[in-house]
Amino acid sequence: MTEFFTAWWQYGFMRNAFLAVMIITPLFGLLGTMIVNRKMAFFSDALGHSALTGIAVGVVLGVTDTNLSMVVFAVIFALLLNKISSKSTASTDTIISVFSSCSVAVGLAILSKGGNFSKYSSLLVGDILSITRREIVYLIVIFAVTLIFWAVAFNKLNAVSMHRTLARSRHIPAALLENLFAVLIALIVMLSIKWVGILIINALLILPAASSRNLAVNMREYHFFSILFSMFSGILGLIISYFTNVATGPMIIIVASVIYFVTFAYQKAMHGN
Amino acid sequence: MKNKYVFVTVMLAVLLFLSVGLTKIYVNHEEENKSEEYTVVTSFYPMYIAALNIVGDCENVKLENLSEPQTGCLHDYQLTPADMQLLSTADAFVINGGGIESFLGEVAEQYPDLKIIDASERVDLLEDNAHAWMSITDYMVQIETITEGLSELDAEDAGTFLANAESYLNKLQGLKAQADEVKQFTEGQNVVIFHEAYEYVAEEYGMNVSYGMDLDEERQVSAGEVAEVVRQVKEGGVKVILAEELYGKDMGDTVESETDAKVCYLDALVRGEYEADSYLNAMQNNITLLKEAFADEKDY
Image (tube, rainbow over all chains, first blue to last red; front, side, top):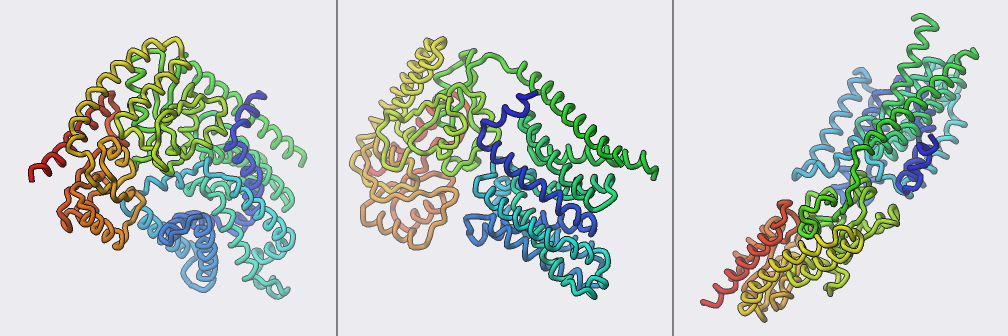
């Protein structure tokens, strides 16, 4: 049993990955609560897909650190999405879908030029070796920023998502808060997408919060369970993936899914509907 | 109310124990499948062929190559998790050395106990250029170095290694003799090369490299460079250009149409069939090509 928790510690890349999981999963749990509440699951999914375009743009421009182009692109993409979905009359999910597939198409077109897509295929399922010291520093910064944002703005943001007009009448800057929130999601998704993988990163945002919703009766519980489930599945998934030679991202999601189904069953059994 | 917390604790605990248990069963199962073989891992193609000839059909030794980059040479190659795991099972790691394995620092950090055999230890490498296997003479030294290294680490099979290496070295000696015959045509000739690796060819055949450029997968050539090559070829009286087919073809065609020089497409031996005789066959081919290229020139 102890071997399960210690055998992998000798490897530098596992220590880096462990650190990254310890920092990123609480953030996913935290932001997930609001994403689920505001029914933004599709939004964050589209955001994840835009990573492909971000990298492609970086490759075209010859940027050495594609992290940078990815983050910049995702932030622009998120703001644009917010803006258009608040203006347009077409329903939001249609707009997000258009944006998402358009950006994926552009990304694929550029990256697959010359038959070289295989170089980037690790992006789809994630590559744990891509976590470096530098990325961990980025993650710590974003961790601090998110905590501050949450402490200052959570109540206001929550008010906006419950009743926008009412919130406005209380002088809450709704648009600004929504944009900041979108930018935060963009940053966190981009910084973890290389090791979690484009195909599944959204699940990591949604599943812990969704499981938590099955159990929680107030905001405090909602946050607590979400963060707990997120960290638990992150750490357990990482360790299992080490021993079973499976990609880490998918393993974390599998654990998170199991938690979701169990809590779902519990909720059904307790409340009957 | 309290029920919920109890439920969550129980759920997480059960999940934890289940996964620890299942993983343990899985890992033990994996380990049973592993035999007591001595595992040798090689860094890339020419080293794999070298080791393959030394190990031969020795039953106690398992020979593996790192997963290959699709592009041939190892520059900028990044290790995959599969590579890391392969190396964690390795008893010896055979590398070409001289900086081609840019990931070596990472490997040494992760597996400080891994025995690394540097094939170029006793080869006089050219500056910033470690493609030593392209010279038959240097390659033979590499074979000797790898054989010694492996014999030291796996003393039980040392006899087999030595015998295999000897017969391989004999075949290489035959190649070398052929190369020396060709040398009478090539000695002192000026050549232009389109791949670093051919500096070793030039060295072995006594040719002077009047201009070298390194064309590979990531390299984009500017118009100015093309002009420079053409100028060098004309001024230096260069008759033959040594290039690699895959990346040097476009440039080769251009230079061939602009000047009288002939482009000789040699095999740089960074990819090919995973068979013991691959090196011998490819080198034989290279010798024939060089002979044709230079011997023809003499007739004019």
